[in-house]
Length: 47
Image (cartoon, rainbow, N blue to C red; front, side):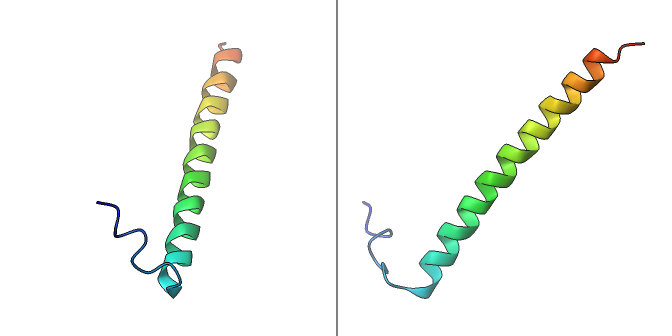
């Protein structure tokens, strides 16, 4: 079932895929935090 993960363990594309996956996760978390911070900023400035 999980032969696609151990198919090319030392391939040059695996590191890039892992790096971009980690980068995408970081950007997703940053986007969520930015939205939450913006909502909190708008909630505290209800004029």
